[in-house]
Image (cartoon, rainbow, N blue to C red; front, side, top):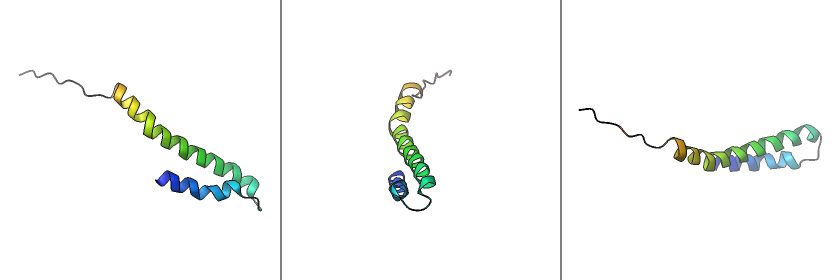
Length: 63
């Protein structure tokens, strides 16, 4: 939800045509791309990696 709101907040910068738009457009595009990719990686890649490599470990009882 936070990434969505932040991305939507950068859309006017990414679509702007006024003074300073030549600097704002690339910045907004990079920020939007970073937010989207970080969200997708967090939602899909991290749980997959955790399920593969971070599962429960067996504890051997030595008593």
